[in-house]
Length: 474
Image (cartoon, rainbow, N blue to C red):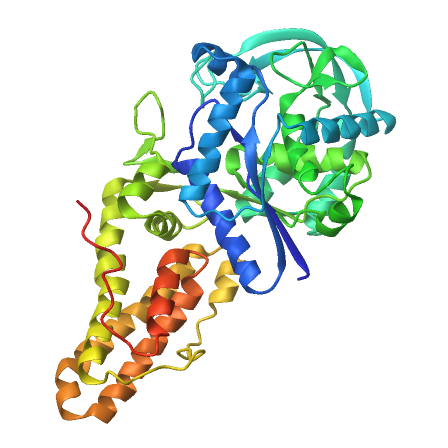
């Protein structure tokens, strides 16, 4: 692999970051760190979606103009990713000048393709989704996600001939030119295509806080299409041909399963219309519930990832989210479950092993050192698990190694062996220390700070008792 370009969705700024957006971003960061460690030229993009009626309404409620509100809210996402140690190469905002210019070029090229036309549309529009919604998708007359009644909209728009792209999209998915994962999401998209694609509106009549259509100022660009194009803007579309040719097509769009149709149907079709390559892969993960309940501001169970990171440490949050739920599936989380992982896997597992072995080595063999690259031999292929997004399995394997280390201390009674047989003590201790080095090396993409602390401590000229990695949380 010569390069790896990975993206998260750009998050709506109508509210502050929550644990769901943190989940996607942490997973993307793990992959970005992993491939960088492999020497792969990696570009990792995050950002915020800042146009649309939803943003304008939120700004009005906050007593601010839309751009000031966007500036304030976007900064909260950027800060959250800093706290969680996210290593994105770029943070794009759709209100930036570079994005508006790139979107204009894209839409003019789309117009030249002959794949758009002027028409009239009537349908239900959900402001929460910033999307038209079918009556069959409603539950008791309201949007099941936002619990609001969509408004009936009848307006003159410009349309994209999405209906022409069903066969070619299906061929690209089945041939794996466009990989849709996991398998159930692929089947969902193929079924959606088989039902017949309909043309889609690419503009709105004077929607609030949106980019104007370059050839028709009475229309604004449909915000979802403006947002999707951020993936091209960030790698130089229309401004830096060399950079764009280097990183496009994107290797991985990481998204939640609620926006997979936009990314696996509409987005690749638009790219094909302007003569660009489709994404190589779209992976859609599942959703969280909290103590069995759907995350909802109304219920008041929204989790602020910064609060958890401040209380437990960012590495703990990163570990918990990717260890607790198989990536791609839905799962339930809670602070109580995080506490169990903290005390069990982390404090009593990894932290305890580091503390025990360094204490014993300092006491019985202070001159013992391990080689710079001495790794514990294991047949477990962690790389394969990470590359197939089986993060929870990769972490479970690493904790099998941790369990082996703690068991080796107990079964060999190292606290007694150090007094009676120093040679054997050093032999077993070296294996345990090598096990810790191996674990910490593989753990780096998931828990970068914890990994750094362990490796730096074990590679000192003299091993001394380590400070607690996971102190008791008040």
